[in-house]
Length: 446
Ligand code: SAM
Ligand code: SF4
Image (cartoon, rainbow, N blue to C red; front, side, top):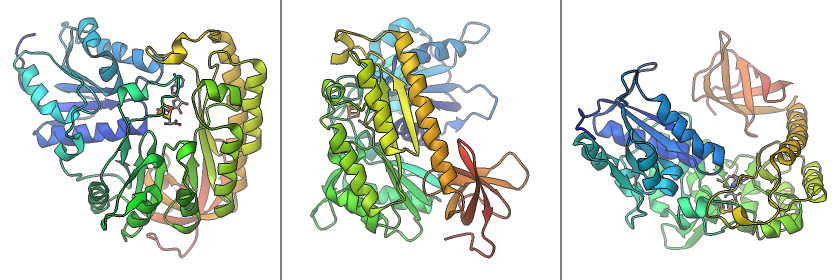
């Protein structure tokens, strides 16, 4: 690789989960601190960071087509850094397969990006997939500019080892960020304009720490402390594991008014044999009992989940149990995926891998049921009054888009500004969004 001029502009492209969105924002802040500016819309950047996802094969392969697309007519490319979970899992392999890439950096090492850029400018390719003892968080610049809804990583990694999942290998062992660090970051986010904070982690409800007095607290205690920030109006958290739904966290849905009535609690499958083979360590019944308890303290809770169809050995009858579970719960929205064998995971070498056509057909049936329930949930919301956190302008003149407490997209017309919490009445339901009218005389900031 030849020496190249130091980059003046950057673009960060993030794929996959909210953790990647968060990491992408933090990398952008880090690059800005180095005097590298975001590339203007439509213009090529001197440095492109591809912040990748390894959760399913399709997502992982995408990085190679993206690298190809960055190649210019004269055969050269901008400086390319591959970050995220593909970087962690395939480090040296990316270097061998994609000569245009000059940096490969894992999710726990991206605070070292400035040093790697200096190496790349000097003509040396660099791979850093360490999981260093010093955490990246302490090395990142303070948060300055955010939208009304911000993500805050509180927990990373996973020790659960579901048999299909790469996360324990790519994100490493489960760690909880220290309480004081999280509170300080939340304060900065609120100062920078956030009105809603979503606490994120692969297993966010496994978060635990010590409060200011040295007492042990969990996610419910953290949410209680954050609720004391006067300008913070809403708190959410994602993604949770059923085994870490503590009594305290369930109770918080009833007694912390800033905790939004929304719970993303993946179940993956509706059959106990499949759940055991997945190493999920909960049963269908224990999962449903958690939902009952949350509904008892917060009857209007919107429920969400993740599903995998076609796990090795899943029979038609076992898949039918997943559809039964969906019918029993009535989810407000969900994610559903075809099982994707991931190298190095136990499920990838299990017998009875399900043919693609069977998975396709099961996914279609599952998604039809989930879409039906999402639309039903939206229709049942019509007539409710609620606040909407305004996130951006809509396509039509005078139209605004935002989120309801139940995480539905809502559009309305009238006077408002980004970041306002506007009182509305929901008047129209579509499959993916709702229309609302402003409640006359309501304040624009609640
Ligand atoms: N920790 C969360 C939990 O256990 O529910 C989920 C985190 S994972 C990043 C997000 C979702 O990706 C999972 O809930 C699962 O549905 C899906 N997923 C993970 N591995 C997969 C695989 N090999 N094939 C298909 N979907 C997968
Ligand atoms: Fe993956 Fe399971 Fe950990 Fe979730 S709990 S991140 S699905 S191993």
